[in-house]
Image 1 (cartoon, rainbow, N blue to C red):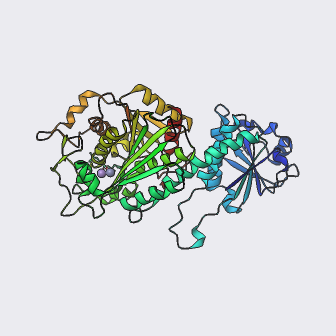
Image 2: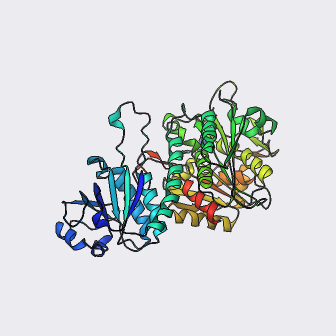
Image 3: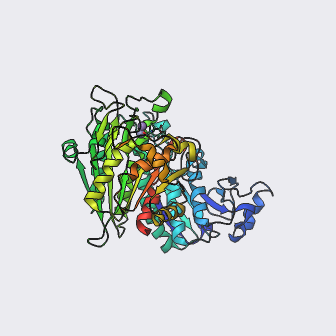
Length: 491
Ligand code: BES
Ligand code: MN
Ligand code: ZN
């Protein structure tokens, strides 16, 4: 999509002009042609509810072929994110498709937010709303119509441009993460996920990618990661990304993401309904890779690393058993209470590796880790656990800034002993509350004094319910790429 800028929304010759209006019709009067438009619809036809639209008859008051009122909801928040989300809805479901609109313009005269924020939200809203995973349809008619040009009219062009440049990057890499998660596991597996990361860095100057293959992973004694990998014919890959945009010698921020390309559950096999959809179990890994891509593409002045243990969790004569005992890279031994609690096993070794190798100033891991997260918080709220209040607050602020949702859960010591085993240092299941005991398991692999947070994205990785905010129906969300970029920039 090409972005362009104009001083006056009335004179843009576009296929459609979108005119943002807040609830109660607020904002309409601020457009020079507002009164004329108001005459085109009778009172009550349009309330300005968030995401609503109304197509008006062609008006001589504007040069565009069509006019749409675009509802932004209540005028009590920052207009920019409201506009971005309304745009996402329009690009996802709106008249773009029915009228095959190519050139869309947005009138900005009544949106009084920071122009850079408006630019960023317009780019993110339009591009992410326009996202559709259609590479696997063989017939052209299943492919979505895409608008080719968005003109931002009636705002401060220089500032808008800066925001658009930023939003184009965050949207592009969020879309990459969505693709990786939407791709089925016969196409994205540990080897092709690693290949994606290697290909990605070729397009981002300064971003480095190293793949550790199975012999190196064996040398590092990642017994927990290798235990999960044992049942798969595809060898484990450890994907490592490094960006040095900060001061030399400054400790990096580390992101660690679960790259479980297909989770059958192993011998503690999942029932059919639970197994279907487990291609998405690499959502944390996808977000980690793509966040590093975006951070580097934006040339953020930080040092950052991304580490993704990639494997499948399958069944074979070589697979690990319920009751097996694995020795992790940290030396701690783990009795397998359930082969389906595999995410924490690949993450614990990745966490040990990350701390030893990079001495990070903060580690944030993310994973589609527990079904209990979906029960507790559903598909729209990420579960956050942390051993550090500042890190937790920083992440909360980062999610808030990009209008995504996170909720902090506690890590109480009294639940930790539920992880004790009678024959090993610990077991990989700790009972209820399942999200918290998974977090407590990971915490056992965090060094003393190491700042750390864990994000459970089991529900939010895939949006299956509805089209909401920047997300699409029955499709991957790419979360938390945008919060991670924000956190890297601000923390
Ligand atoms: N990948 C799953 C968690 C999951 C469930 C993600 C539903 C997305 C949607 C994870 O590996 C898993 O199977 N967790 C088990 C752990 C249990 C055996 C302690 C779970 O949550 O049931
Ligand atoms: Mn599992
Ligand atoms: Zn899993």
